[in-house]
Picture 1 (spheres, rainbow, N blue to C red):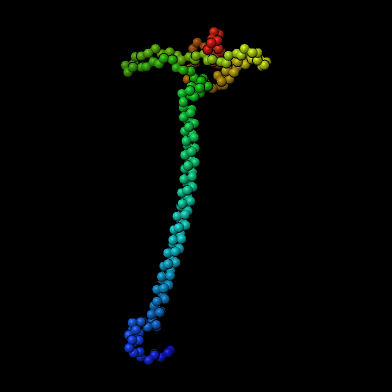
Picture 2: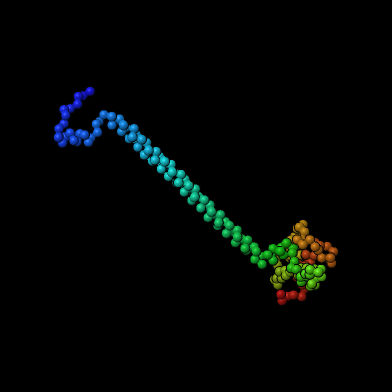
Length: 189
């Protein structure tokens, strides 16, 4: 090793005492520098992983928001469909297609068992069918098709929703076709 330099005098001696010696302190500084570098590197890697996780969550969130918007639009379309089918005229049309008839005057049971009102069996009013055109039609058999047009809906094999049939009609399948025929004296309707 080298010999120590000659003793310093004056101002240089005071500065030398303030400055630490170069030998053992540089060896003690190396682990500290490595520790700081490792901590900074670990912090940067942690920030990178955290940022990646946040970006992944952000992409997932935007995908879920898009799905929510699509499902909300679909739900609103279905609600509009339900609302349009729930309107009274649509319900009446669908009920007539199923063979239902409007109810008559209602009757009520009182708590003591007496009947209030006049119970009556519901009967279908004669439904208006298309009036025959004054000009001759080009169909080969226009008259037989008119009663048969209403018959498939009534004789499709499905029972009436109420399950009750008028006691006066001998044939339940023939009753709806008779109801679909126009009344003979209603040209003004």
